[in-house]
Image (cartoon, rainbow, N blue to C red):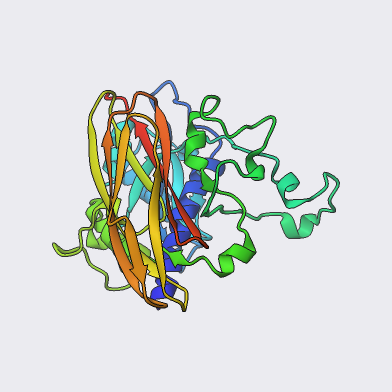
Amino acid sequence: MARRIVSSLVFNFIFLNLFSCLLVSSSHSDSDGRKTYIVYMGSKPEDTSSTPLHHRSMLEQVVGSSFSPKHLLYSYKRSFNGFAVRLTKEEAQKIALKEGVVSVFPNEKKHVHTTRSWDFMGFTHNVPRVNQVESNIVVGVLDTGIWPESPSFNDEAFTMNSKLNKQAEFAYGAGHVNPLKAINPGLVYNASASDYIDMLCGQGYTTAMVRLITHDSSACTSTNTGRVWDLNYPSFALSTTPSESTNQFFTRTLTNVELRASIYTATVFAPPGLRITVDPSVLSFNGIGETKSFRLTVQGTVSQAIVSASLVWSDGIHDVRSPIIVYVLNKP
């Protein structure tokens, strides 16, 4: 049951990121100040035939009789419940307070970082295509921890270079899985459904919002409001402001997936201006399933828009790498 819930949560996070980028055509503002927003309402409804009417009714309640049907761009009902709509900022804030609404966020356009993955996989440019199978497929890319110098990113037109594309730093880790190494990773960052629920509660989600996603009796209480920095994810991201001194810590737990005993030592690769420490820096495991926790602390000041670092746990056989990103947000 827990595994099924985790899969559902992870799918929702990945799919939300994808559909907000791909399924809506424009994010520019109209002359009346409207722009495209995505209204997410959790898992797909059991009765999808009336979904568009329900979405339109909600909008009429918020906007009033002046609501124009042309502003409802699309109703999502196959994989989740939600819709794309053109709203003013004030209307978006109002509909975010409606019962059943999990989140409301602006639509954004994204740009690909690489278009040459077929070269890395060994495909020729005239590889046979099967349109009947390939059509209507959305591909989600998981963060696998692959290194930024991977041949997958050796692209002449879309180079993984932060000087050309600042967002490229956030693509570190996405790429192709090496099946042979994946069989025996040494250590894993394990996360259960409760970890994701704690993170959502800590981000301000209410019990009603969480249950729209989990479809169970999960609740947000004073004991499970987890920090977003402590979600047991195999990467670290931190935002700061220009010239602000950063001092933030993350907690993580590693699980040994080998039968033998092993000792892992932490190595940090950090750019000038950042001091990154790991405590403890050495972890000893006696057997499979044993867990050990550590704290990673990031201190310093960054002058660039985005800087990257990394943490590697190594026992001489396995190298378990985690990317570390610090990015600057300009104050409004």
